[in-house]
Length: 407
Image (tube, rainbow, N blue to C red; front, top):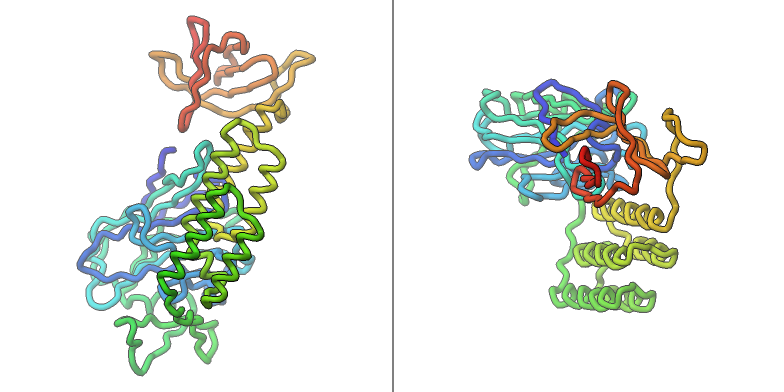
């Protein structure tokens, strides 16, 4: 997959890089001299912060239904946000990603930086970079906050590279979005910089809910919970009895269900990955294996940013399993076929002959032949009997044919 590099002011449809409604936004900020805060503003159709629950920042890291969630540093990025557009209410139609300076300094000290979209796409469903907007302090002078980019709804979800600076920092951004700045008598002891809080355009100011500090969990308790889950995972299935035992033990140690999920999240994701690998090993996913998979997902109740790529992978393996068992989809085509010929697949592709250049073609697969149709309405028919080998690659498929002019 080739990433699209955007310039300031450039816009594009998100469907151009992925049909999925879930993606990750990663920001890499090249500066060791500045202390920077990164936040996401969920705005209404008028560009106002009418619901402060969708202001996601260091002190409120999750929006309702996990529609937006701060993930922290990942894969070389300074901060990552999980975004699930399908979980946003209809009132939220813009997501604006902002960086602001905590303390002294201005953005001209910012080094080479970027904001990028990571999307999950077939065939491997790994997160891949779909688009990137690069920027640096060379473009700024005394600005202290920057609206980097936004995702907005206009007929469909779109992306805009903004790069607009604000001289007054986060205060100015809040006022720009219709919020008001709360002046504190003293700064919070836990952090030298306390950002102003947004309100709904009317006094009194509304402060985002503070997450109560969680009591520390005894490391021995964490170890035992992971051990109990590991014993279940090693057996290949999560039993109701084993799950209840783990839950009863956690409850006796004053550990909540949410804390259990946090403790086992990494192990649980690894368990689900193994379920996919083992179930797909023989090429066929049975109805029982599918039921066990859904049961495990319900039992674990992991966040969407963990389960989404795993669900995609499971759906792909199920689809391949159906195909291996003879369940092929039928699609309509304008191509003239034989009376008993059924079209199973049609797509735009790029065709490359050995020692020749790429050309865009239409690829049609039927129950009898593969058709390669060129832009000049020419092309070729290849019967499946001439296929020697089919080699799937990460972003292409190689056909080895028993004909001299094979592709």
